[in-house]
Image (tube, rainbow, N blue to C red):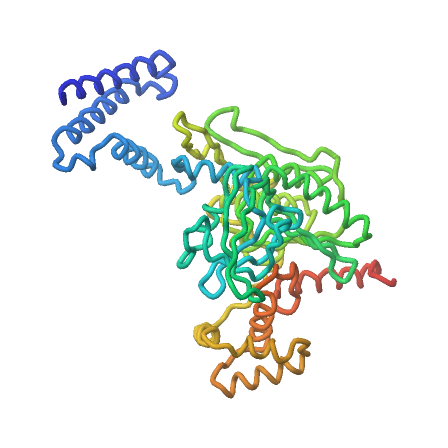
Amino acid sequence: MRNRERIMWISLVLVLLVVITASGLNRIFAGDAENTYEQLRLFNEIFNLLRTEYYDEDKVKPDVLVPGAIDGMIEALEDPHTSYLPREMYQELQTDTKGEFGGLGIVIGKRDDWITVISPIDDTPAAKKGLRSGDKIISINGETTEGFTTMDAVKLLRGKVGTSVTITIKRESVSEPFDVTIVRGVIKLETVKSTTIDDDIGYIRISQFSEPTAEALTEHLADLIGRNVESLIIDLRNNPGGLLSSVVEIADMFLEEGTIVSTKGRNAAQNQFFTARETAMVPSLPLLILVNEGSASASEIFAGAMKDNKRGILLGRKTFGKGSVQTVRELPDGSGIRITTALYYTPSGVSINTIGIEPDEIVNEIELTPEEVEAVNKLNETTIIGDFVSSTPDYSNEDVKDFTMTLRDEGFDLRPVIVRRLIKNEVEKNRMPSLVDLDYDVQLKYAVDMLRSHAMLTGTGSGS
């Protein structure tokens, strides 16, 4: 039996070699076909020796050895951005880039060790079923969520559109837990959010560059233009990137002319040059772009395009430095592979791969000292912050100042700005947090102050 299996595998490899050779092995391996043949034959020999002689048969099954060999090939490239994607991971990637999935329409997190609804999303199955902020999900389809991570819950809550899921809810105002059965619908990920600051500054947060992002941004920009904003802040902090096509389309909304990005790869088809098409929606409004070490890939393309074309000012911290382009291919078994096929270059011709982009204005976020981290951790083990919020719902700056002094007397030595953030976290723990926080977000406040100074110097501010 084993000899027959050995012959079968040898035959398969030989057939593979014939097919590869027929399709242009010399071209693919640039004259190294003979060496490639020898290496594949060596691989086949080792594969069969392990299959027939290794003592533990469970560890040498094809579905164990072949993925291991794939991982080894990719590891040899020493490229963290080229990777094999098992079926589940590949499907998750498709969800992320397409920006929609089958689900309930709730934002969830961990509160008091339980999966908790932070907010139902408007006009979704969850909202229509009456789910509320603060509802604790204690089981999903009869399986307790005790000890679940948020991702554990997401995997069970997401599913095929039209299928149902039963969740058990514990609500403070109801004495006993109760079941809610919800039919999953199409949930679109909200990658763009916006608001105004003091009516005249438009603030736009882009969390990811997915397929629907450009269309969503167009709507938000139109809304802000209709409100007569006099400047814009684009927040790309902790935006990991996304699709090249998406960010090129978005950069084009802000540039009347100039290069957006270029790519250079191994093959001619991967050498591309993207320029503005003179269709900008906001070609002249003062523009600030917030970035940090979590801004990567497509975020850096946008930031680089704005900086090099002198269209906007970058503010924050140096970006991540992922200047490579990945192509994703689906494999026959439903898995996939992500391959680095090119590097991208900013309009000035610079590759920022592993380097990042320096902002025009370096502004650091508030960082806690080790002593403050310890104090916050100890404080979170108490009900002190919650008690303050309950007893002083309409707290003033003076109340926060007095409370900070009280905390110091009790051994919690924290700066007032940190105390204010802890209070705000408590207030917002069962609802979506505010989109802007000028009390704690020093980078955003710096950006607002810069725009205010510009308006004063040019005489274009409100009331001038």
